[in-house]
Length: 308
Image: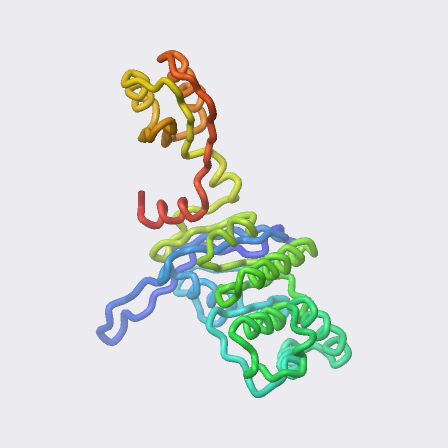
């Protein structure tokens, strides 16, 4: 069994270019490796190519060039599709059905037998907190409740790989926490989750690895702990500040800002921290506190997308 849940090789999708229309490259030379059993964040600004990539992985559209494998089989393979779960960002459900009827319909589409559907539907409704509304029609649900029932259908067939496109977009903080718990539960079962969200704080709390897209290309990919490992800013409380002290700190850091007793230094790597401390002591300052602060995922995302 392959160790990768998703692998793409120079995936490319071009629209247009015929009948006088200028070609538009939606995805170009995209290569991803998503290990099994991890939660993978798929990030990028609007128009970066995330939805196009997901549709190619699902087999809904064909790539112009390159290839992709899911669970060791080509994207679009019938057997692989039966082992997937998917919640699209913009969904339109049969709102005249009750939650149970909606899930029963999707269970049939998954090829699940009657006994399996009867057992599984109450389980997933309990998981997403809709057991008491199982006989309510979908049209009676709030946007957040519709998101929950959509999540229920995505995990109904006990998939090995779950792809969630903005699963928390309509949820309140409690609902977002419940989705994080569901994702953590899926991971604990050995399943792989590919998660697309603009709520980067949610991604930072939930995901093991991320890939950031810009204009159809992956511009940064790796484990979150590695990408955000080094502190980018050091906050120091320094007494007895002098012009000579601040001048030396300016020579050791990218930027230095002093406000009262607080000095904030932007650094390239954590190796600069001992030099900052030594400079304070050497110039007669008294270091009362030092707090290294690493870059957040949101800071990294903005810096990478803006090309800084």
